[in-house]
Image (cartoon, rainbow, N blue to C red; front, side, top):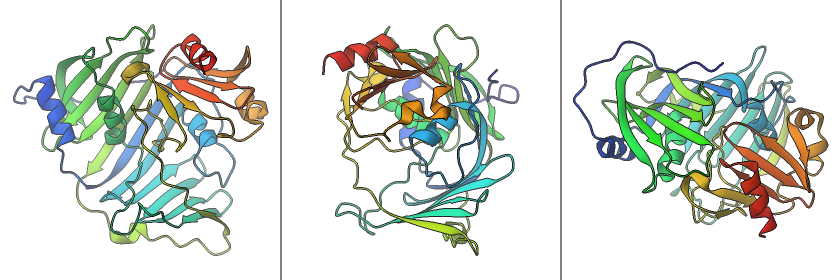
Length: 337
């Protein structure tokens, strides 16, 4: 069961309209912070064990974060410096980004992956923004989905991570989406999103929550973004991939907060958008992987990951379709291409 992220009694705040709350979020000036983030997913999937040591975030790690509760320490300083420490039961995984230097570290087996390099459009003067999994990142995905058919209301105020917050409720007008509603708790002082709660249709408890449990808006210690592998660590070197080309429409949110694939295409808009990836975009044999076998079901022409909030269709020819829509919508989109 997924519990609500809200805490404390209703606080007294000046009234705001939905448009004013959206403006507060889009114009927030918070660029540095440190805090603890808790993510809970109740999507109807069986529990997936922590994936292999040394795993670099991607499709596999995203699957892990579709189940259960995960806690991470998050540090951000500007658009290109971030550190995320995922606290596993008996180990710690770190993502450290400092300009164009990226480290993934897993203490379970003392392994590290170093990703470095740059692109013509991503220079030290124009650093690539860091896709850190925070309530702000998640809220921005949903704000991008707001269309004329989205019904916005203001909910009761409360406290989140010890800070007074407004609640903005979003209710999709589209009948094609699995999303019933989205609640965003917004810091009353800075406009920073403090928590996001997503409910799926025909499901009482929230399907997904992401919230700060403590938060500081001061700049983190600069040394947190300088990473040196521990002695004896096994190190894998990788080149920085090409900068993704922004899609024509916003993609559904990823719980891991990752950037869209550079070759993705999007059909539809907003809540009912469907993301398509060409053959070869994911590792071959992924549908026969024992971890995925626990959560995927065979369907005509491929396999599907079905949840209460998001569905993924992986075809035998290697193409992938995903969206916050029913599975039959993905199958129709695949048939049309």
